[in-house]
Image (cartoon, rainbow, N blue to C red; front, side, top):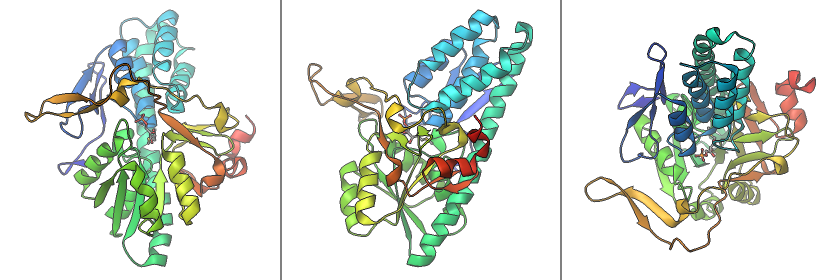
Amino acid sequence: MNIDGTPTRTLRAHPAQRLIDIIDQTRLPHALHWVRVTTLDEAAHAIRAMQVRGAPLIGATAAYGLAIALNDDASDMQLQHAIAMLGATRPTAVNLHWALARMQAVLAPLAPEMRAAAAWTAAAAIAEEDVAQNAAIGQHGLGLFRQIERNSGKTLNIMTHCNAGWLATVDWGTALSPVYAAHDAGLPVHVWVSETRPRNQGLLTAWELAQHGVPHTLIADNAAGILMREKQVDAVIVGADRIAANGDVANKVGTYLKALACADNGIPFYVAAPRSTLDFACAEGTAIPIEERDGDEFRLVHGVDRHAAPSALRQLAASEAVANPAFDVTPARLVTAIITERGVCPASRDGLLELYPEEARA
Ligand code: MRU
């Protein structure tokens, strides 16, 4: 993905110096600010405070965070401590636990003196895999978009929720990868970007679409219904934080309402996610843990003041009771199809197993 015309990834690893640089997404869209992560505590903080966010990027950052944690002490105790600490940062995105389990499987059997170097190699493999899988999702999604565009013969109006783009992954994004593929292939595409209260990840989506030159329009979350009824939306595409074995999808809170509105208006509702987001051990969506975040995310509005300095505005008293579930679950029956790096499948156990037959044995 391009920033100011320069291909850029969201995470820069420096294995020789045993540290990483990340984009502080809490500063976007107002400032592009890179942060250096040199300790386990800093890696855990970056994930918890959402300096990095989006399921695949959380997974990749956790993998590098574990490598950083083993720099000076790669004992069994430190390995377990780091995995427990990173694993406790955010509960819903299964990519975090997938990445840590994969790292553990590589590192635990090794002698401690071998672990640090192996951890940097294993983390790099996870990051590279994320890039390749998201690129493949882009091509599969492009096939779907081409079919819709052929039928309508006009600009393809795609709606998305939250940020499942380049910023949420190491590169390309999941839901936005087909959008970039379509734009780069010359398809006329326009994106309706829903703001995504209370953390406003839609602003991140608008920022990265602008960097790549993709036409888009921001909307308040509540405007999605009227645009669908007015036939201004050809398809909705979102990412996922966890997909259960039966095809139920956990994603940013508000996703379920979009899927309901799509069903009422006959609009296809697609979910794009790599293998690391599929949780075959989780039978259905009701078993997915939903993160409840601090009520101050709701009580305070963040932006910049007239001097462009980061600033918060209180819209609710600290005593005001608020609920802040960060995700919701969309039942499989509302999902038109799931797009993964292996192709497009129905949102069902059979559909997923057709793409991942090896999971039937597990
Ligand atoms: O709380 P966030 O910003 O980490 O939530 C992100 C989402 O819900 C994304 O849609 C999801 O992780 C898919 S990212 C490719």
